[in-house]
Image 1: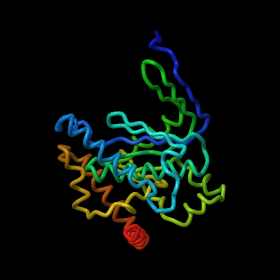
Image 2 (image 1 turned 120 degrees about the vertical axis):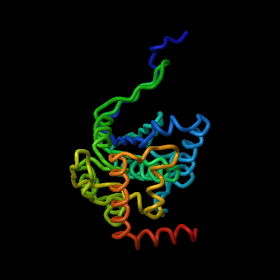
Image 3 (image 1 turned 60 degrees about the vertical axis):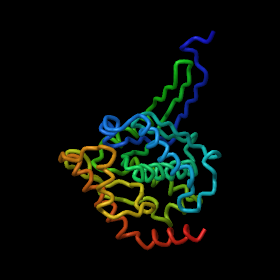
Image 4 (image 1 turned 90 degrees about the vertical axis):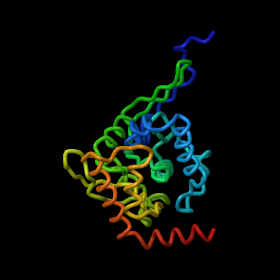
Length: 256
């Protein structure tokens, strides 16, 4: 008989990329929807993500063959790479962006952070355990923001670009990441590299606002209204600066 605390598998990455995402307003979603509806919400995100992983038409690796793992639990989504290569970073970032857009499409705005550090994944007969500085760093980044968006730990993009490989050139030649004066809690702002999710989400301001209201979420308090405004401001800023790139991308995708 297998003991409940028996270790089935344990893997430690001394340094890898980790992402943590949180579904905003999830408490109200759970309270105001049936369990069957919750299942459908998750399925809609998963279907959007995995049906079209190569978001820019340039990343040809299938997600099954990539070095990224993903774990959904309640309102939290964890992703991590098996190493700290530029390819793994780009795959992780693109997948996070797909999940974020899938969340918007399901009227479940997400907030996230991408960081680096050690991570241990332990599987036992009792269940799975994830812990390490990489996960803690990603969580702290996610929790400090006041919008639906995803910021990247300071120094990661510079380190990736410094390697000057194909992934670094791709990042430099496409606006997949943008620097932005990110709205933080307590009315603070700080300049971060962010995921440019507006590149693959075509919505107007009113449609974006409604995404925060659907599924029984409450938007009648100041904190939520600030998040909505900050998210719409970021969306409009990205489109004003990179609208031509987005239109070209959409045209190329529609011709395939």
